[in-house]
Structure formats: structure tokens, C-alpha cells
Length: 300
Ligand code: GDP
Image 1 (cartoon, rainbow, N blue to C red):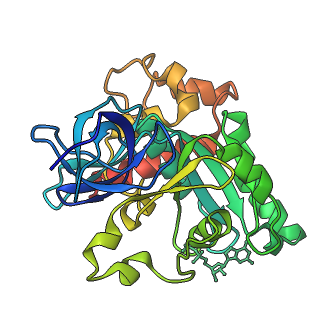
Image 2: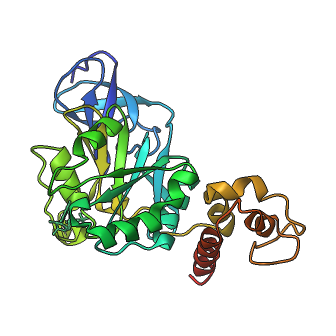
């Protein structure tokens, strides 16, 4: 069939050998496209060149990704699942109770893919004085080492407009434990999109192949969200000990100064991280969390 002229597009969903492409040069509906041969694997969030056609258009060229999220396939090979992401929003809440190791693990995983993490404390409506104190104690280190913390409640709507302006004109993914309120947040930010609250995404998607794809949504205020069950599990798969150490951003200036080149930073003599702790430059809790995460990886 006839094909239209080449134009810029954005992949908003991915189905096997086909993708849904939205025009970027002017507003217009998305169109199902197939891929010209040899384009490699394309994922949601990719910016591409395409041509309209009937019944399907065609993607003719790809462009470089500013970032990508990958996850291991069934053979353990990393496969990209989403591209051009600006923020990994790490959602947590008083319930289910967050642990520093888990927060640190998400941060390390974000650092490993070079995407800026934002920490989002949801369900602030639940915070009484003791809960507030508990969250403050848990989170106070993060602004000190350069991370932004946002707060929100999908129940009281607190913080939602600040969240919207932070996410404006950027592409984000929401990650975090089941039950922290990711679906509720997405529903609050995306009118018209109805993600069931309080259900495991996997269960909802069982047997319906196409819904497990990563999908890109537009916030009415500007900015995009990419979501899929796989993306929500980001951060919980394998990393190397070096990636873990490097993902503790305040360790970086010290990592190559240890006496022993293979220093594991677990109390060996001449470890420059230990010296940094002694000087108050690194918190003992963060080094303990590093050791715990690194050692848990080695047992996998
Ligand atoms: P997800 O598993 O991360 O997607 O979490 P859900 O969005 O399914 O929410 C889990 C539970 O937390 C549900 O019962 C929600 O109603 C509840 N929830 C979500 N956001 C808030 C909030 O801001 N405040 C309170 N009190 N509960 C919330």
C-alpha cells in the first residue's frame, strides 16, 4: 500500500513484531506499525522515524536512547523493556513498612542505568507523630547525599500538584513494593486510565498477552509515564558487587583509594570507606546496607 512521508514518532506500546506509534511532529492518533527489517529491538519510549500506511504503518529508522531499562529474560540475558526514561520514582509508604536496604537497592539499580531516582513517600495521610518520626529517621540521609524526596497522598490529594509539576515534560516510571500505592498514584495522575488498586499486576494480566507490554501514557499536565508489571519489579534483579558499591553515590570518591584493589569494603585494613566513616563523611548505616545488599547478591 501507499506510505506517507517520513515523520518523527514515539513508540507507546509494543506487541511482538509490531508497535503503536504516536506522531511527534503534530498531534494525531497512534498507529499500529510493523518494523522495517534490521532495526533491532524497539521498545516503548523509543523515538523513531516512521511512515503512515494502511492497514499498518512502518518504522523505518531508530534513534539513540538517552537511557534504557532492561530486565533479564528467561535465559538471564538483559533485554531492554523501555527507553528514554528521565525519572525512576521510588514509591514508598508507612505501610507496607519500608526498609533502608530496599530503598538503597532501588537507588543502586537506578544509578546503574544512569537514570535519576526520585523518592516518593506516599500515604502521608497515614502519618501520625510517631509515623512521621519513623519516616523522617529512615529518609533523612537521602537529601544529604543528593536525592530529592517528594510526598503525596492519593487519599487527601496532598502533594499531587507538586508531583505533577516535577514530572511535567519528563518521562517517568514508578517502582516500589506491592501495596505502596503505585496504581493509586497512576490513577490519580492519569484521568481515564483505570489500573486496579490493591491487586497484583501479574494476576490481572495473566493470560492476556498484550497487556503485559510496557505502555506509555501522557499526563494531562505534561510529561509521560511508562508502566508495566515488569517495570514495577525493576531493581530487584541481579547486580554485581561493583555496581552496588558504585550505586552508593557518596562512596564514589573513595572507591579507588583502598589499600587492596579487590577491597570489599567490609572492614579490611586500608579501606578508604572505613576512613571516610571515621571522618563522618559516610554513614555507618549506609555501609552496613551496602554490605548486606552485596552479600545477598552473592548468595543468588
Ligand atoms: P500498588 O500495589 O503499589 O499498586 O498499590 P495500590 O495502588 O494497589 O494501593 C495499595 C493500597 O493502599 C490500596 O488499598 C490503596 O487504597 C491504598 N492507598 C493508596 N494510596 C494511598 C494513600 O495515599 N493513603 C492511604 N491511606 N491509602 C492509600
